[in-house]
Amino acid sequence: MVLLNLGSWGGFQFYQKRFAAAILLTSGTLAWFFLLQYNISDMFLNSSNPILGYVNPFVFYGFAATSAIGGIMVRGKVDNRVFLLSWIALGVLSTILLPIFQQTEFMPFLSILLGLSLGLGLPSSIASIADRTSLEERGRVSGVTIFVTFGLAILVMISAEIFSLELSTLMLLFALVRSSSFLAFLLDKFDGKNKVEQGTVRRPDHGKDFYYYIIPWLMFILVGMLAWNLIPPGTYSSAVSTGQVLRFICIAVFGFVSGVAADRFGRKPSVIIGLVILGISLGVLGYAISELTVITYLTASGITWGAFLATYLAIPGDLSVCGSREKYYALIIGLPLILLGSVPFIPGLAGFTMYSSSFSQILSLILFLSIVPVLRAKETLPERSIGERRLREHIKKVGELVEETEKAAERKMKKPAE
Image (cartoon, rainbow, N blue to C red; front, side):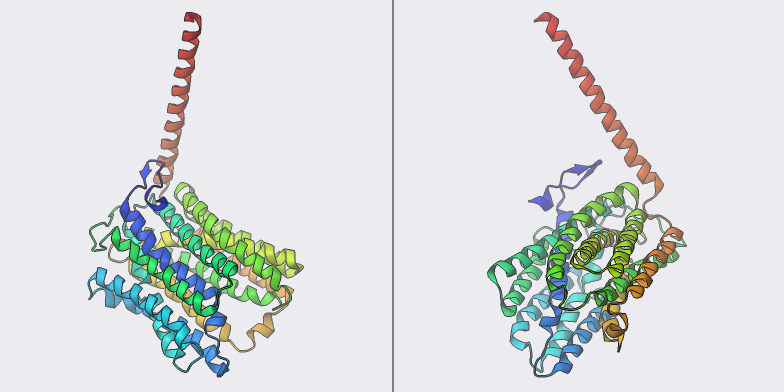
C-alpha cells in the first residue's frame, strides 16, 4: 500500500502506520468537501423555492465555520476516538440523506448537518498530522495527504463522467469517499499515544508570525472566489470543464511536490511562488480572455492550490505544540469558510466584477501585495534543519562517489589478472 511504504527520504522513514492513519483520516474528509464544493450549485438547488438555493449554501458554510471553531471546546470534553468516529459517521449519514431531502423544505436542516459534519472535527483531524510528524518531515506528509485527497476526488470525477452518474448516485459515491476515513482507525486508535513532541520551540512572536501567514491565505481564497466572475458563464463552458480536470490533477501533483520542497527549502518559497504564478495568470486572463487563457488560469490555479494546501497543512503545526494546534487549524479552516459563505452573496458583486480587465489587475495586485506579510514572517522551518538536510545529502553523494570509485578500482585490478 502506497501510504504505508513511501520509502525513506533524506533520512526520515515513512514506513509508519501513524502517518498513514493521519493521512487517511484527513484525506477522506477533504476529498468529500472538495467534491461537494465542485457540485454545490446542483446539490443545493431548489427549483420549487429558488430562495432556498441561496439559503442552503449560506447555512452550510456558516455552520461549518462556526463548528470548526466551536468544536475545539467540545473535543476537550469527549474522548478523542469517540469524537472523531462520531464526526465521520455524521458526515456519511448526512451525505446519504442528500438524495432523499434534496429540493425539499427539509434541505436547510440537512445543510446544518452537512456543515457540522465538515467543521466539527476537521481541525482535530488535520492537527493529528502535525501531532504525528516532526517539523522536518511535516511538509512531505502534508503533501502526500493532498495527493491522496485529490487522487480520490479525480477517481470519483472520472467515474461520474464514464458512467454518467445522476446526482443522487453521485451523493452515495461521495458518502463512500467520506467513509474511507474509517480506515484510519484500523491503523491507529487516536487515543493520543502516537504524538510526536518534536517541533519548533514556541517563541513569544509565534502569534504574530501566524497572522503574517494567514493574511496571504485569506487573500488567496478571496481572489480565487472573485476571479470566477472574470469568466463569462456559459461562453467558455468547454474550456472550464477541461481546466477543472487539469486543475484537480495539478493540485494533486503540485501538492505532493510542494510538500517535498517545503521540507527541503522552507515553507515561505512555496507560498511566494504560488502567489506569483496565480497573479501572473490572472493578469493574462483579464488582458485577453479566451479558451486558452481560461485553461491556463485554471491550471495555474491548480498549481497554486496544491502549493498552498500542502504548505498550510504544515505551517500551523510548525507554529504550535501538541494540545494547542486545533486552535490554529480552526482559524485556518473557519475564516475561509466564512468567506465562501458570505462573499458570493454580496449584492451586485458579480455584475460589478464580470468581464472587467481592470478588476483582474486589481486581483493580481492584491496577490502581489500579499507577498509582503510572508516576507515579514519568520521561516517556520529553521535554517538549521535545512542545513542538516543539505549536509546529509552531501554526505550521501560523497559516499556513493567513494563506492563507485572503489568498484571501478576493483574492476581495473581484475582485468590484468584475467
